Image (tube, rainbow over all chains, first blue to last red; front, side, top):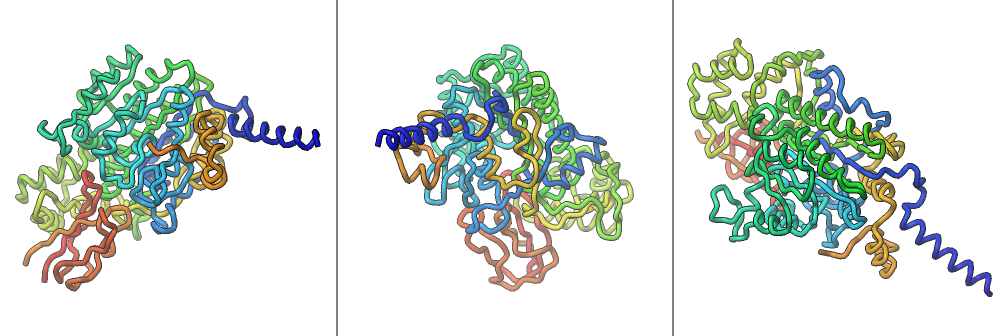
Length: 471
Length: 65
C-alpha cells in the first residue's frame, strides 16, 4: 500500500518536473534568449531572389535548415493568412484565418512571448508593418478579428512588452488628431508613457534610446506601415536591421534573458503586388536584420535564432515561360516601389512623356513599347484612390524574367532555419505548430502560474495544454 | 464603357483572373470582413487585379460590357 502511494506521488512529481523543465529537452541545450525572425510572405523563391541580389545570404550561416508547412485549420482551407500562421508560430496551435491567438471558439491561446514575460524575461516585437498588424499582434494580443487594429493597440497598452517598434501610429492617437484611425478620444501613446514607455517617432530617437539601452520603448515611425525599403528615407525611418540592433541592445540588459520577434512584413506586400524589385529589396533588408541577430547570437553564445516565414506569396518563379534565365540586373535598377512610389507619380501625370520619363528614371527602362504605354495609361484611369499596378510591374517582370501565378498567398512550404543552442530541433520538414511548441519547450515549459492553472483544470491539461486565462 | 472596382480578401479570396469574362452575379472573390462570396455587380472583363497594402485587400477592376 505504502509503495503504491509512493509510486503515485513519484508520478505526480515527475509530471511536475516535466512541465516546469520542458521535458525531453536537455537543460544544457536551453537558450537563455530566443529571437524568432519571420519573413512575411517569404517563400523559397523570395529567398532565392535575395540570394540573386547578394550572392549569399546571412541566413545561409545557419547550420540547421529545413522547411515548414503553413496551412491553417481545415475550416479555412489550405492557404493561411498571417493571423492563423502567426498564431501557430506564437502558440503552437492552429486556428482559422483572421483570428489572433484564439481558438475559433474564442479561447485565448497562451503565447511564447507571454511565457517569456511570465518567466521574468524581457520581450520585444519589431516589424516593418503596423505594430497592430497580424504577425506582431499574435504574440501579445488575443482577438477574433485581425482587422480590429484599434482594439489590438489597446491590448498592447497592458501587454508589458518591453520594446515595440514598427508603424501604426494611427491606431494609438485620438480621433481628433490628424491621421488617426481611432473612433474615440483615447491617446494610447500617452497611456503607455504613463506606464513607463519612452515614445519614439524617428530614426534618431531610436538610435539615442538604444545607446541609453534601458527601459520600455514604444517606437511608431509611420501612421500606417513603414516604407518599403526602396522608398525609405534613411534619415527619418530606421531600417529593420537598425530596429533589430536597437531592440537587442535594450533587451539584452535583462539578466533573465529575452524573447524577441522580428518581422520583415513588407516582403508579403511587394509579393501581393507582384513587384519583384521591391520584394528583392525588402528580402535583402530582412536578411540584414538576420545578420544583426546572428552576429549578436555568435557573440552571446546563449541565444537561439529561428528564421522562418508565415506563408509564401505570389507563386513567384525565377525564370518565366520560355525565358528560363534570370536577369537580376533589371531588378537592381528599380528606384522605388510600384505601389507607393511609381504608380502615385504616374497618377499625377499620365502623359506619354511622363510615363517614359518615370520608366527611365525609376525603372531604368528606356524601350517601352506603345502597347506598354497604353496599358499603363489604361491602368491609371480606374476610379478611386487606386492605380492598377499590373501594367507597370509587367514591364519589369517581362524584362527580368520573373513570373508570378497569383496576387495572393500560396500554400507551398516555407524555409525554416536555426542557429544556436536548441537549433537541432528545427531540421527537416516541420508543421508550423511545431515551432511554437518547441519554443515553449526551449523556454523550459510553461510559466509557473500558467502551469498551476493547467493542473487545476483537467480540460486544459488533457485537451489544450497551453491555454491561458482569457485576458 | 466604364470601370468598376470591387474589393476582396487578399489571402486566398480571388476567384477570377485577368482577362476572364464575367456575367453579372458571377462569384469573383471573398469579402475581406465576412468571408462571404462577393459577386460581380456588372457583366464585363476582369481588367486589373491590384493589391492595396493599407487594407491588405485586392481591388478587382472590371471593364463593363
